[in-house]
Image (cartoon, rainbow, N blue to C red; front, side):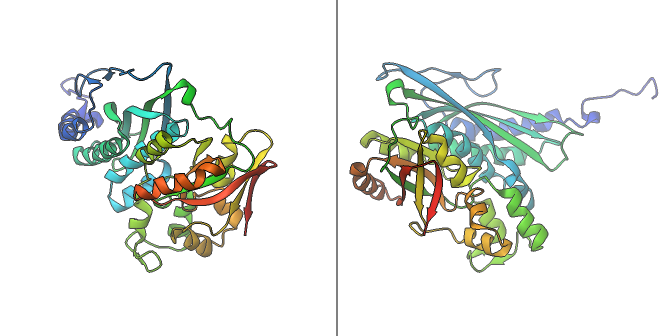
Length: 346
């Protein structure tokens, strides 16, 4: 190297100007999520949030973190990036919601090989939308440009959220008992789990493209696969304000088979009534085209139910009416029984 050659950060593949442009483009989206607890603005070294503890006797903070997984590959193929931001928020806030927590704030992490300010702004736009849907403030984040580590056109995202719940109102499943009714809230599709199997089936085995129209779905394959995860916060908090709930399940990786037992006390299992809910046609399509065993489907996908509540039989009908009045759908999908594990009853 010549003594006169002067290297810059840009020579190494890091574009500081493009990163600054991304911050400017995302500011409006971020500020739309701010609630009264947010102190300061975007760009500080840390996000400040003032807790409003009025009405709480023993407040407990509940935290959660997650990513979107290989669903991001669908975003790369479709060039649709705002929906992945919604997915990111959903995977975090739905998890802490299971314990009865109301989300307070959210932080994101975006890592890429080369920053595109437009693409980063789209991702953050989706994150902001997810925060608005869940009532959380987007108070901080990090965008890391890592040339040589990620390819130029790809990225990964992760999120972190904190919520609050009154200690005596924490829902941990310990009150679930035999005979409790399982009420399922519908998913919007695959959500953010099982995409490695989905991509293997559609792109490797069936040689399909995201632009292919699928008659059974009434849309292109890409449109079906990029549909964002449903955020259940407002719906479930309304339920908790009016009804007693023994336990809740966010149906993510592991499907029914792995997630339902996570909240059940020892010695209890669940009987799921097959056909008791309206299933998104994407799941039968996957099962048929992939020749996938039913047991594999139920331990991989949400199968059309993204969130489950366990309630006393005396509460079930009233809760169903509350949900229906809000314009949402709900299904009685099964019961809690003696014996461990999940059984699928036809």
